[in-house]
Length: 211
Image (cartoon, rainbow, N blue to C red; front, side):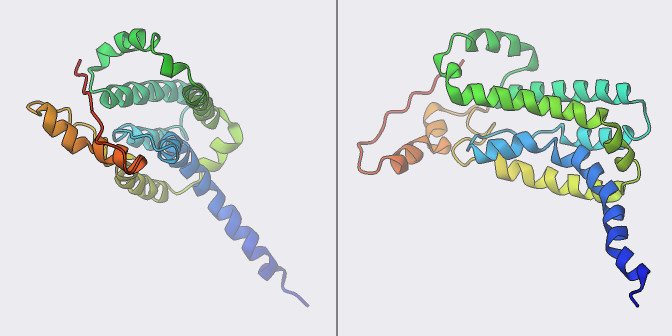
């Protein structure tokens, strides 16, 4: 005769893990998706300082009304996009509207790649809102281990900047105060990258436009 308790142990373990998995999904995995997509597409991003805010929101969202959690999520996503874009282009956050005005006239932003990136970003924003509005996921996350989620968030906060930073575009190091044009060209490795892409070609000319 088979002991029923033995058969129920795997199921019990799964049910014990699900709440923590739901909490990690809301606080770490879904917020980190843009960084993972950027890494897959070979796009450099500055460190996303708002990743810690998503983890804090996941903890607070378990105790507040869903509408409050969704409103806080929208604010954090807006802050994340603003700080990331501003640090990407080395601009104050207040200058971003001017950047968008200039960007509307650039033809390369109309390519399929950038259209796909915009669609993915919009889908991610919708997913973030859905995660904090979903009643079942909220119920599961309410019983998850906050320490496990915070440990995972700490690991991602340390690893994410190292994964999404490319050697030929180190944010802040080649556009800082006092950097000369020639040192920026050397430090950026654009010449080496171009030579690796087309070996045997003559040395390329690099034009740096400083605005």
